[in-house]
Every structure is written in C-alpha cells, then in structure tokens.
Amino acid sequence: MEQIKDKVVVITGASSGIGEATARKLAQEGAKLVLGARRTEKLEALVSEIIGNGGDACYQKTDVTNKENVQSLIDLAIEKYGRIDVLYNNAGLMPLSPLRDLKVDEWERMIDVNIKGVLYGIAAALPIMRRQKSGHIINTDSVAGFAVNPGGWAVYSGTKFAVRAIAEGLRLEESPYSGIRVTDISPGAVQTELPTTITDPELKKQVEEKEKFNGIKPDAIANAVAYAISQPSDVSINEVIIRPTAQRN
Ligand SMILES: NC(=O)c1ccc[n+]([C@@H]2O[C@H](COP(=O)([O-])OP(=O)(O)OC[C@H]3O[C@@H](n4cnc5c(N)ncnc54)[C@H](OP(=O)(O)O)[C@@H]3O)[C@@H](O)[C@H]2O)c1
Image 1 (spheres, rainbow, N blue to C red):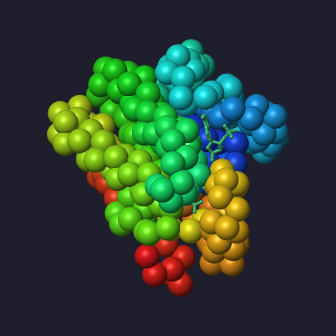
Image 2 (image 1 turned 90 degrees about the vertical axis):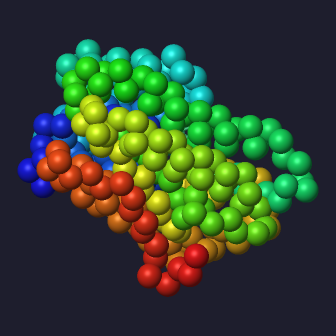
Image 3 (image 1 turned 180 degrees about the vertical axis):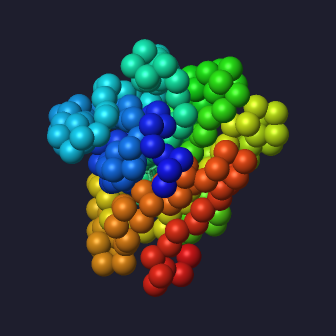
C-alpha cells in the first residue's frame, strides 16, 4: 500500500470502533495521523501505542458538533505536518427509536453529529485541499443510507442518506476540477460501541445481539478505508458497501 505511506490523515471518532481500527491500520501502513474524539484518555492510549510501534500520530479533544473544535483539529494537522491528504469523517451515533416516541433531543443529536459534524469537517478541510489541488474526503455512511428499516431507524437513516447526498454533491462539484477524491464507506453490522447510544432498552438489546453475533470486526472497514486511500491519484473509489456475509439488508 505504497500510496498510504506519509499521507497526513485526520480521523474523527477515533476513540473506539471503526475510527480506532482505521487509525491502527493506517499507522501500520505509515500514515501520519491526527486523531479526534471527546474521550481523550482513549485517544492518548491509542497515540502512545502507535508511537510505541514506530508510527506517527497526535490527537486533540474534538466534539464534531462544535465547528471551532473541528477547525482546530484540521489546523493541528497543518501546524504539525504542513498539509492534509485525507479527512475521514467517521464520528457518529445511533440512538434508534420509533418516531412515535418523540425523542426529539436524540433526533437533534444525530443531525448534529452525523450530518453537521461531516459538514464542519468539509468546511475546515476543503479550502486547504482546493489550495493543494489534492485531497481525499472519506465518510462513514451506512447500509441505512440506502434503505430505511422499520422499527426505529428513520432519523438515523435520514442522517446517513444525507451524508451520501452531500458526498455525491462534493464529488460532482470538486473532483473534476480540484482533484479531490470522495469516498463513502457504508458498513452493515460491525462490532463496536455504537448500540450503547440507544436509550430504548428493547431496541438496544436487539441491535447489541445482532452486532455481537452477526457483526463483522471494525478491521474490515479499516481495510476498505485503506483500499480507497491506497489507489493512485487518478482513481477515485466513491462507494463501498460492506456487509457481514450473512446480513440480508
Ligand atoms: N457499528 C456499526 O454497525 C455501523 C454500521 C454502519 C455505520 N456505522 C458508522 O460508523 C461510524 C463509527 O461508529 P462505530 O460503529 O465505530 O461506533 P463507536 O465505537 O460508538 O464509535 C463512535 C465514535 O464516534 C465518536 N463520537 C461520537 N459523538 C462524537 C462527537 N460529538 N464528537 C466527536 N466524536 C464523537 C466517539 O468518540 P467519543 O465518544 O470519544 O467522542 C467514537 O470514537 C459512525 O458514523 C456510525 O454511524 C457503524
């Protein structure tokens, strides 16, 4: 994976699950990593591990619902490494519930993290990537961004449909002119901490069991991110859908 070595990669939601696994994978391939999330103790441990293994990484406390925080994470990449090759907008949460339960605060939270967090990332990185005439914006979408499941998935799906629309708009606007690549990675069930954000006890149990018994490891998604980044600059991987083999939809 020659193309990954020395690339400066910013990852949001790097403190657990898919973001953490991707940080490890890209560090092994020689990327320089700038990691963001709210749980700094987890980021600190991950950065120490990466540096201990001969890699290059730093972190900053980042809440993606705060645009100054996101700007500051991108600024850190520029201060430390002078450029930004990849922004991986991965932070997300999934407090599923049926619409009739009116958990409006949770709807707002999903919109703030899953949609606005991605937009803040784009806002911070795009001017730099346009100046560089190169860059790569990757988002963690979901199979829920392609189809809506009944039973509590409406708003989460809505956020992931939105991310897909934004990614496609970004690709159409930028890729032919500024050389910026855009990739939307859409996982099915993956074994991560994601179900912990569900407050409906029945639904939480259901999703936890589905992920525990049928979910794939986050490394599978990390490998897909590495695959997208490792392509030559004239090759843009736009969509990757990765399900457990046994998952239907
Ligand atoms: N697991 C699956 O089955 C699955 C399937 C499809 C898509 N996805 C998507 O994959 C992405 C990563 O989730 P995961 O499965 O790896 O779950 P996870 O283990 O719960 O990781 C979520 C990450 O997002 C971060 N995060 C949450 N709110 C944040 C905020 N306000 N600001 C900054 N970071 C925030 C968390 O860090 P802190 O709590 O430390 O801030 C954590 O690092 C999400 O976008 C999710 O929608 C997951």
